[in-house]
Image (cartoon, rainbow, N blue to C red; front, side, top):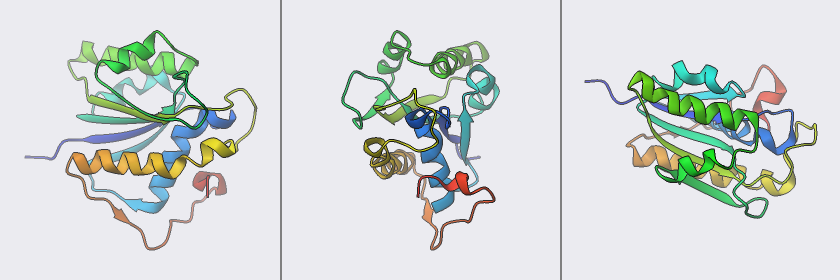
Length: 176
């Protein structure tokens, strides 16, 4: 019997400051850790509904994103089960609309992955910049630890690399 497929999905637009938080966390996880074959790390960008096919392949889905939740910039969140539909009423970007609709559409395929969303309250999602704000940048490591904890809870052992992978594109390993 094959182990369950676990997907870590970073979403957001890396061109708008803190909006790219989820993608940056996934990029850093990819650069620093080795994962078993049944764990996929996906840069979902702002693909939204286009992620439906990929998401429906997962048994467990860990989403990393910038989350507007009326907290202070840098606040870290973990949302699951009944907390996720509440986010549908509080959408703050087009990718959140599309992502949540894709998650809902998984029901039509009879393949809804067990989902947890982890992320950080952004400070700035409007400024055109590839750099995270300092308050949000400080939360990259804690959110990475949250993702690794979620994976550990699912029985996944991740191996930290002795040396980070050197990316082909220097922006792929951001933040340092």
